Length: 151
Image (tube, rainbow, N blue to C red; front, side):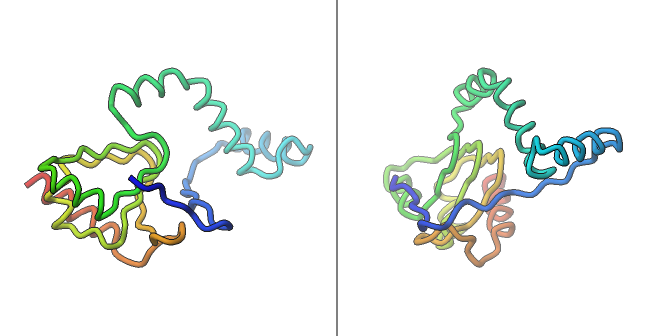
């Protein structure tokens, strides 16, 4: 499968999450930021998350292997699906990270070739020539693919 080559200045879109933090914890976070340990609250939180993930790296590695997950970015293209269809194969798409789906992938083609779809992280549709979110109804596409796979 050809690698997706982002534009020189482009980078993957970060996923935003919301967390609830107690007042005391938030005060300590702000203190560390004020004292220059971190650039801002987000910097501290990202660092803490990375440290936790690193402390469980071996467990993550074993689960990724056991579940046969693609770790990182997987770009699902019409060419990949057409090749699977030609071989008479059904794909089990399992991604830990980011699944990108080419905007020209139709629910019909995906249903013919995708046996199961698991994304731990974030799914996106992207333009083929630049790492930018493409127009289109990704939620609708994934809903339709999932509905048809389960039918």
